[in-house]
Length: 345
Image (tube, rainbow, N blue to C red; front, side, top):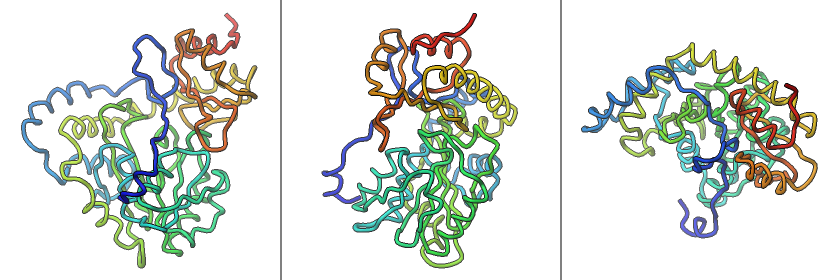
């Protein structure tokens, strides 16, 4: 990490509230968790008296089955953001540039800057048409946060091939892909996929995730796995995170039920929010609403009613938007009421 760049780089705002007296729609977390995770967590407490095996064979096997890759391509990490940092660290140096979507997750650009590199911003819906050749790294968020749409799978694979030909590493952040039935890019040559247990499995505080590194045939992307595996800290996951991860990723019924429930509630929420705001369709467990003006008064009124929404004006290029998570029906109705949207009885 570049010391001078660190001094010149600030923090990035995020959603989430730790206030127990509010209903938090600012963080996009599953309202439910898989069966069996409490027992797995409690059993892991005894194991936590010793170091976990640094190669995490059980976790890597579960992760590989979950996304459809070889366990030998899996690098355990304490959350998706850890994969992002690792990938940027092994690909970006001073004066290197990275192709970064906008608006999108602010940590991509921040990590590039921390390494002394320069983010080259491209509209999120144009990034698959951009030329990766001038850049050491290209980043895609699929589905994109905060705009919520998933990329066409064929177009994304075509972009991956162009990145590989240009010897540009492609980082695909699939933090929300598990909410869709779209295929993962895990194992694609020259691609690093970032996954986490945070969103789909409802464990933001557990800090568990993994990278999948697909080595390319030659050039700058030919040793991605070795670079990430060497650079990651030892014992990247504690025993509880590893055990809960295994149980969660193997619960296919939970994943299927979550997708169905979130899709239904998302449609309900969008139908009502669209009565007052512009709300595009979404592939993610959240909706981006254009309120048509400075959203601060709306955000403050919602907070007075005990509901927190995400101020999306902190995302590059957005100036009149809020982002709201998709929750259970009763909570969603409370959100609508806080935003001044009538819901018929």
